[in-house]
Image (cartoon, rainbow, N blue to C red):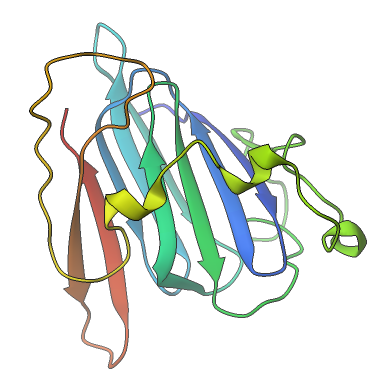
Length: 178
């Protein structure tokens, strides 16, 4: 049986910031579909304990403009909303929010304050998303030739684009190979 890692989230009118706290994650798989279906799975620890999150986001998202980064302590996902509007909650289902979903108060800004300049941690300045080739453009395979295990390194990522039977619908799946 899989466990749920802590998922922290914050938003702007056009973005959702998702941070999954899971140190030393291995075999990371992220899948985001345009309808808002979000799936995460990985293993962690000496015993390779499986972790999984499977949620329906509040509204539709732009898969091609969304970006992910896998670090040594957490997984960051910037999800681009299909429509620029404030969501009432992270998940589509009404009722009690799952216990593993928390508000990321370090990144949270109220709707009426979002036009003020965000702090540097809000922009993920320390993460180079452009080198990850996430969100369209075909399939790339990045091999890590360096044998070092620096904590500051971002794990190599591959991406698969799949097209569903619906015209214009696609999903993005990211798999990290450690």
